Length: 341
Image 1 (cartoon, rainbow, N blue to C red):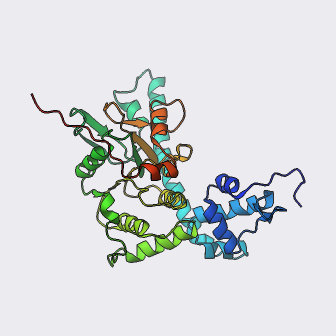
Image 2: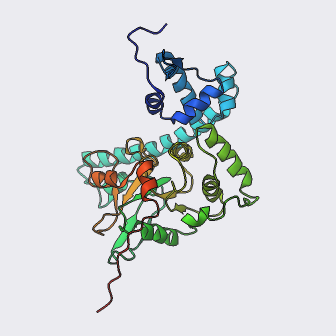
Image 3: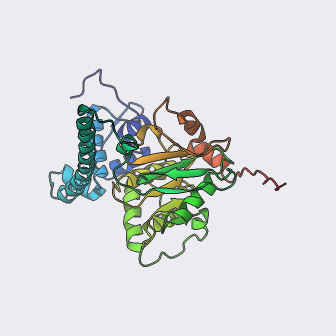
């Protein structure tokens, strides 16, 4: 029995603590997975017992289980856990191998120091970057002045942010042009509502869409078109313009959770975003990076996701709530190009 002093949370608070959307909580309730208590006024209320149950559901979902599979596991049938745990183990083993390689480098450097041998030029820099990953370099387009831009050890998930007129869309397009075999997914992906999906991607889109809807997303043409672009075979990397375009907050939350479950070793994904749901600075992981395009058109920089880091406040100021995004949708900043003398 819950202690009289135990705190009960409303749906919004419970969802925030569990890292899911309030809509997802309602879906869990509809499926009989979670039964919140009720206040005297009839409002849903989540106490310690409900939160523990919700945490179990959220953990199983993060492992990639459907709600039907979650229900079976919670009822005592753990057979469906094996493939999910095997995939999670493979992901962790990949990270362990990367850490092992880095540890060997550190041991080598320490052994060299013990012999009085200082690290060679560039060794410390290589130590602090990912062991593997695509590296690119190119001259920045207008509105920059042609400065050289380099991106090393590209992560699976990369966010591109910046204020209106900062040049982030031009940077994204140049990334798509520079990375061998990359593709750019523009806003016109939603131009044909109800259009038939290509047979090659239709099964993958249907599976992903069903999973996202179970996690609180709203099925829509915008979401289906985005998933079709993400599922397309061939591109070595994908650059997406305003990934949140046409997606409500619950859908954005389900989508970013889905993208994070891809794990390491997948093709890099670059996403332009102005949404604090897509880019929750408190949730950025080791396999993610943030590229800031400053307002003053100084070269783009990588920004660490913690307060006090250079550029952190600038990134935070670029991220709007979905409500603000809806009010500013379609607003375009334009700066005239200077004529050559």
